[in-house]
Length: 311
Image (cartoon, rainbow, N blue to C red; front, side, top):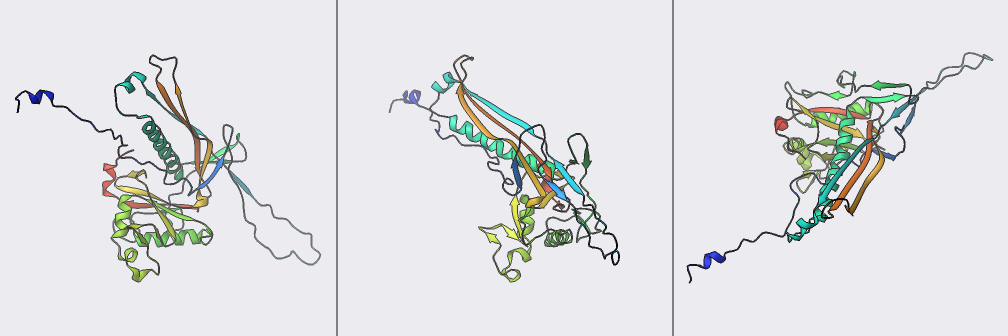
């Protein structure tokens, strides 16, 4: 063997181009109310209040009247875009064809944007009012549902110290919905938690044992449904001081307004040197919390909150 053969050694690179770890699909779109809009703002829904039956005023007495009240909510669009360029000269120097992966990256970014918009709106201020010129702010009532003063289940519910996602908290959420007159037999109920919440559930015998349920709740080792809630896992939930904000909602509790659904445009930039390909992605959407009582905030201890990984 020639001692000079190492001079001919080569380096081979893979032709496989894969996306790095990231959330690629929306976890929440399709689980909330949704509509399409135009204009600078939109009112997705109007609520009519309740009236109470009363005894007649008396024989031949004048008939009184009851005036029902109305509430209107508003949603505002937020514009987002992403622009990626692929240099034509650079493409000549690689065996890879990255264009489709660039499109996949943009699609994943759009999916995360839907979820971020909904998660941010869940407990944010909501705009209500008769028309665009007379809006007021409705803040999320974080008073404990235990006392009936609000729509939050505290992290210490059922325990002396902060605890994770427990069956007791899920039972309390059902009680809160029932007391608020949410029609749980007709509504789709969703519980949005994260990896720590999944771990908490898998460590509770009430969830994993068939002795406590007539139907299996585990699907390939994942809890997909329990106590009437569809369980959804997202690593984008808000946290503070090692406490994670779980979102528990009826489908009628959160709204996504679409001004522009995902639009992709792939074209050559003839105004730039090398005529690069441009992959331009745009969208416009807004979200709002709907009627109080249709959405709950459940606080769960999560020691890994400081180590969140995005995207």
